[in-house]
Image 1 (cartoon, rainbow, N blue to C red):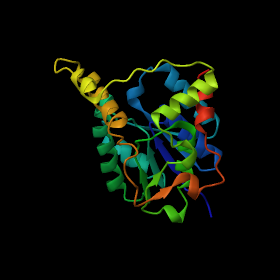
Image 2: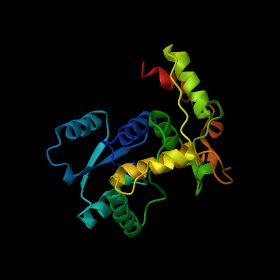
Image 3: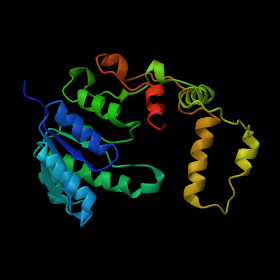
Length: 236
């Protein structure tokens, strides 16, 4: 069976470039949207040319030109959008809606993947693994490998072990942290602090069970994902 043709939108970004590489490595005909809005961003243009040299196809398109997006989508089977959707680039979410409109009009896409990715090369590898896997039809793949589930204190201990440095610990109560979020604070900084509060004080990343979908490391045990110790060692 021939492998699905994949279009990567946001292919020059932090995650996007890894998804392009994983798609090429796994033998998929790989297409990358070359947005006209790039202009003269030399680094990104050079990256696109590098993709082309590796075998990827560059497709010109623009979010301000609906028909160009439709034409791009019609050339592939799968669209992977890796554009960031965090609060600092919220306009990207609106751009993704334009892409969804183009996909609906094209009418030929069997899989659509949009991004709120966790981490780098492993995420890219797992994402491409799902493309032609019938087990993942209309399902969500999540990354929650048992060996990488650690508390904040355990993470600090791991860093101390790999770095050989003992860190100073200071406790900040929930009340004091909330009090530090002043109303006149920059909106972006306040949003970032709110996220820190929900993660580290309320445990919103782990205080729930996922009832539907598949966990990546269990579905694809042949993939050796990056362990926490290995990841931390990169920063030494």
